[in-house]
Image 1 (tube, rainbow, N blue to C red):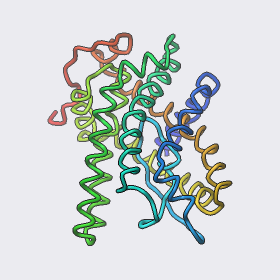
Image 2: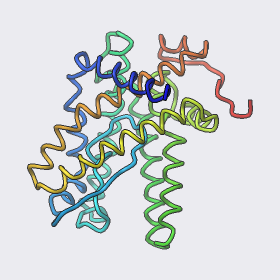
Image 3: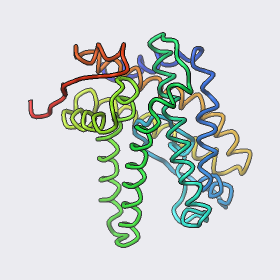
Image 4: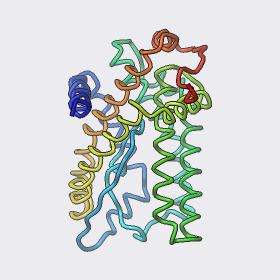
Length: 277
């Protein structure tokens, strides 16, 4: 019960930062619309649809982080246009994510910062992270096409993978780590469990609760429902991202070497999350 209260308190603290960060609200809208395939699939849905997603923390949640689309809906995923838009999504999305998380970090730490400066600083690291994510999802999809009966196993494997790496972009932004170092630290945190696991489970639970009504609204009312869903998800995305930044600032500040990193861009560190200890 105390853990639930603490998580709700963290969300309350995140909401308290909304006024200072509301200028970032257009970013989740833009990212959601950039996922052209899912926009087209949603607009082509027919009949009643109900679904649920189980999201884990991510740097920039979009409408598609919460909206569950049925498999096999018409889309452009494997068309030339789909491949082009996916490439643009990865590139421009990495740039937006870097600026978004960095700007939230600056507001939380009451620093003077700029979106473009944060985006330029961490773009390549976020790009490597997103390329890893898309590669993992592609391998998963191809595996399911080959052996459809592996769906449950593939779903569990994806959850474990997303859990293990979700800290990576936040550690890049908050501590100024390179992608590889941040990934190693995220994996070490995941193996230790504790607060890292607890936060992921709470996030997943609240994300699933948000997913049900948001899926219903976005997929059953055409353009109107999609538009309403886009405007509803923006403050949700911002609040959850602020909460995750606050969480990682708190968890990293408990270790003296990392506490110093909150005031610098270049970090020389030794892992504090060795799971063997």
